[in-house]
Length: 203
Image 1: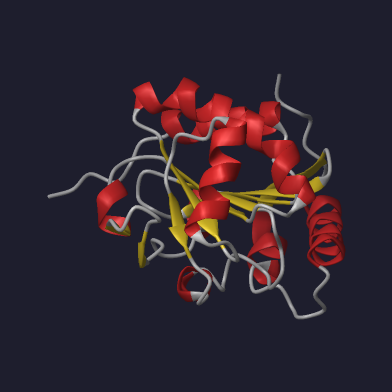
Image 2 (image 1 turned 90 degrees about the vertical axis):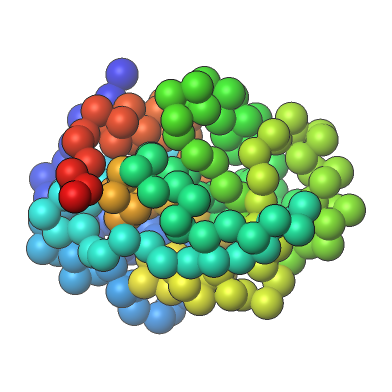
């Protein structure tokens, strides 16, 4: 069941405040202006959640990076598909809390074409692999100790905001962002909405 939405302005202020508290950063959130311009935002579980109306979403996310298995992946690899990006590292306690739900959601939505990628900000391959085995994570993760991927997402992921989960629409634009633990029912609803929405027709 979807959560009730707060009034836009009240929710926007709450989301921004909670985002900064959770991330531990004092820098201005680049998405704050877009949130104030009009989003459907609400507070869920341990993290602030913001959904961005289609008309105010920014351009498609552009990134390229190496997965732990050595494969290079870019945004072109998920063109036309709903995509979930989750920023994590093994010693992050909230990451461990949300991991079983992310694993379950990947299994549920992969047959519908939804792509899941982790973005690991600290770990070596062995540590990341042990975490994935422990929690049954079967989707791949970018190794991003050098911050290359987070740099590409700087407009969407505040510094030190781990975990953060982004849901990209079929056009590769950020449709929603969760700062902190991704609560399963909330993320389910966001993914279902993104799947139901049409993508831009390609010539």
